[in-house]
Length: 110
Length: 118
Image 1 (tube, each protein chain N blue to C red):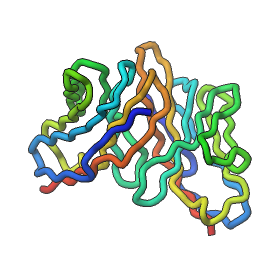
Image 2: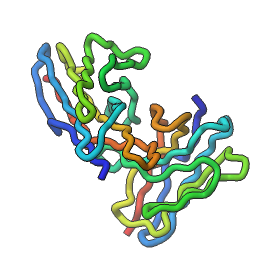
Image 3: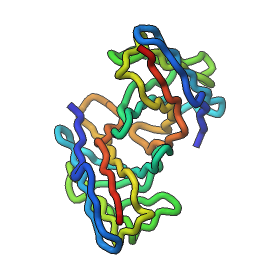
């Protein structure tokens, strides 16, 4: 399976945007880029996913590089509730199994 | 929509006993469910893939006779930890993938079950 690389942690101030990078240089043409987040003592929560084009939903935006070797999850205005571990995962086909890496722990300061 | 529940949310059992954890998709039919395990301060590790009406597929290193999975209906999968030992203490999380006519391919996770074996 293609691997992803994410920073271990990031800090942000409340109400400011957060840009979470993810490198996936060995991505294949059929890999979808999925993002999930996990709040403390909870199951992960789906955030967003994309294939080639940038994507927006109510939670976040996903910017995908033209060569697809990297992507960035954008939280437009961080709130305290956004403090979580964010996982960038490559998924080979719709609904295929997820392989979780270390993720990025996001700290939001009031 | 797309709610997945787990029961119980936490359980304490004695070493040598068996524990059953239920995972339900509440508002959609889940053709495939997944079971994960997460130790403190670590990431999720996939244990097995559960397909409705067929045998589960276990990841390498996961003992299928110890972690029994049954996916008897489109809304329920169960994980039974047999002869539990303290090293089985962990956070067990299920997820479900379903089809409800919108081409969705994301997974929806349950809230997790914390198992403590004494």
